[in-house]
Length: 445
Image 1 (cartoon, rainbow, N blue to C red):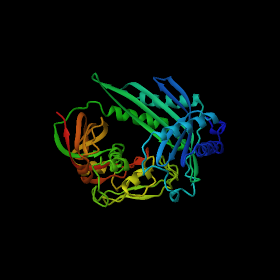
Image 2: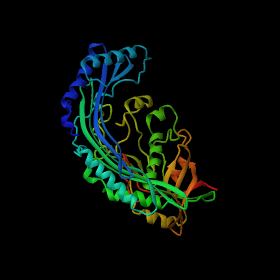
Image 3: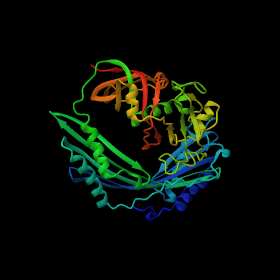
Image 4: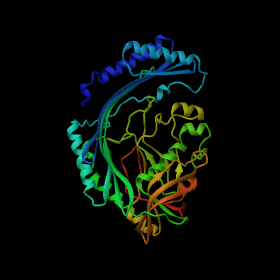
């Protein structure tokens, strides 16, 4: 499982990138960029106390993009042989001959290249053997199955992976980092009076020492599943809604989509021309910190070699920045924000209240713990998704609810955030606590 056993050290991978770039120059490219990714890992799923799947993966890929008089061509290969690399470069050059010139195409400006690569503590190898992973998965699932109402299981899964990513371009920039990611999940089914419910829990980290224990994951999966038994519909109404932390993350994902350069220059965003305007309630501040040690989205440079920087995207509700690559920035007449490939550790800054406190403040309304479907229009902001959760009365959970839809418009939903919790879910590149929305339409019976 150790990366060192691979014949491709980071130095050799950098050599492959440089070989790509040199070959591109030989074939007449005015500029070029290349990247190499290798990743290997282990995945084990146990179900009903037995091994269901055991998989090893060992993936590698090399991509080359060449530019010639603002014409662009890209190609890739999974073979690292010099002949395969030469063929990939030739394919990219041939493709460029047939593309239209685009004045916005090209490498990110040389002045934006990262000049120092920080050690962001992304590499924590987990030298776990398959039989050890099997034991962990079985322990996790067995804990969940100890609960009386758990009648079946979709299994517990252990995943561990380690890889390296190298990017270089003809500005002379070459950067690399090695990373790990490990997770444990459990999905179980509860039954009562002939009705069944399904739920799950998971833990993820770059460092295996920071994973929740197998027993804890199994117990939380079981408790969440059992708590959904007896779910019912509620009458259609307009009511306050709390998005549990991992569901609040989806709201920020829609926000990121709306302020991303591709949507903006295509004029396909409900937040077009909203820079320096109020887009959230003044309780909301959203930051990006690419340099968090061990962060799931940490990186010193983006996919174009541009140096990443901590920044504030929303300050007290006001939109302060977009999410731009060099191409989308040029299309908009702006500068890249170091976000080629996406955001890096985006965070909704927490408040001081727990989830219980938010429910007490809400008194009556809906707590959303799962969302279903993709009913979001990025152009208009119209929002309508199936939901599962709990009905709250007198500040406390009364019963589970299902077969409902929560709806509104994201511009209004963002403005109606009246409280932000302190229960930050860090299991993603987007970190969020629970949020309380003043009012949303809930369609039920």
